[in-house]
Image 1 (cartoon, helix red, strand yellow):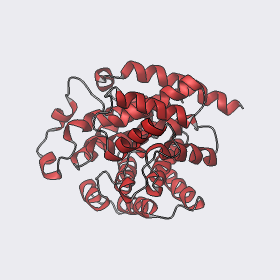
Image 2: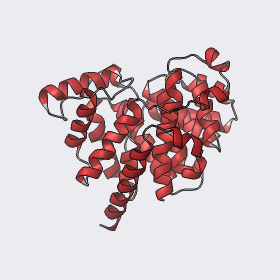
Image 3: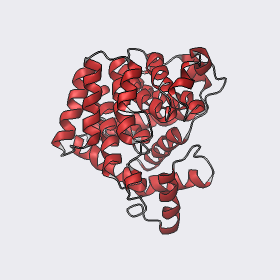
Length: 307
């Protein structure tokens, strides 16, 4: 289980770092990029996707619980230090408001444009924190973290779907049944919206054996949470190796770092550390911090199970 915890966070961070140089590229451009060029970066540098996930982990390890106010302070500290490479407009606005009000409940952006993937990209540590608890508690924690920046139901729904996927991938051995459980759980929570619709579309494209690029073009690969979540689940279903899955979703272009981060977290949770090549782990700039924080997070999650 510790290997799956580590696989989740490494899967997120390495996907993020490999996708970083190609963000906003289009599919036609990506077709000409050799696999070796994508994989042979000398140093894997993360973006705000991984940095925000690390902020969550730092807070949980420091406090021993999930405290939204402390998480918001960790976000603000990193933001003010200039640590959020590639930060989105919604997160930027929310953290500026939090700096002013110091109220995590009211600083989140409430708008149509807040339906981005900024919560889904960072949610993996919360899925791990709640690995041994119930879905009601997981939903509450996802929602509390999401509200710091995104007061948008699609953003929260998408993040909850990814958290559910990671949670189930830790324990179940069949990908199709994992996705079915995610879909049924979303419905049981009353989440019947475009996030659910597009995940179901991903399931159908997978079952119909549609080619990956056709699937991505149908599902979308932009920063819209509906696109990111469904394309990540398609990648999770389709690929049996981490590298093949990450390369495929990066090649689809657009929001390459976040799409690869979210898909990478799902694949890492399912397969564990053994699916992620050592040479990529060694090049990751935050390797030591991930090792330390993830092991501590695992112990906290285990203690919560015993309660």
